[in-house]
Length: 288
Image (tube, rainbow, N blue to C red):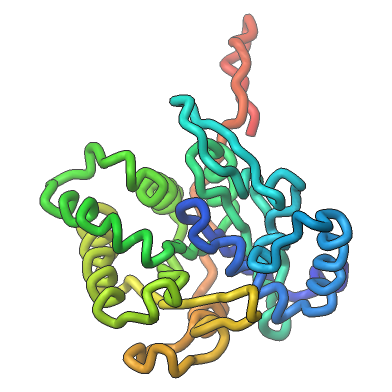
């Protein structure tokens, strides 16, 4: 494990998006492919700990969701008192050596706004970002995004798409460079090209209008990871399931970050976790 940090360079990639859209599964799958021995050892420990609560369809997600509550699922409630099934609530980092001499450090962030403070902290640690959205759920809410395209400014938005917009807003305001947008769980729409194209068009227009991300700079990658069969589509290798997609798979987008020039003079950001009362003779003290 310690040998990993002997790599000459580390690239921090913050993975964010709505809850239960496949962020932890994506990071866990990459971990399983490039650190197979460590992955197998960890999964054996999880199986022994969870016993009957172990779910193979969450096998890859367990790598990031390391707390027992996250692994077995639990019922929590947000600030309005509405209940929801909880999963990831902590920021988790996984070091993955994809290419020689470079370590890719993936930061898996909570998706539910209940843990927005943790998300801010995780996103602030990234050099680049991957925005993950499950395409079936996105398509069901696409009309809400279309309605926002009619607005000159993004002043307010429907509660139903809060988990999409807030982390995206945080990421881009913090200066995170968007590596790509991942449309996950393509198997849920049977790899339908027309649904993909419709979602791609709307999201590109949305990012351009309200976040000043040029359409030609927005890279969208369709993927699918099925833990029960341990099969992935368009994550590491191209697939015949989506012959209409001519671009390279996700891993090529990630590796291409290595070739980009590194910026050294970033503005300083401090995610504030706690503030203290003003001490006489001193200014307000905050920690983060």
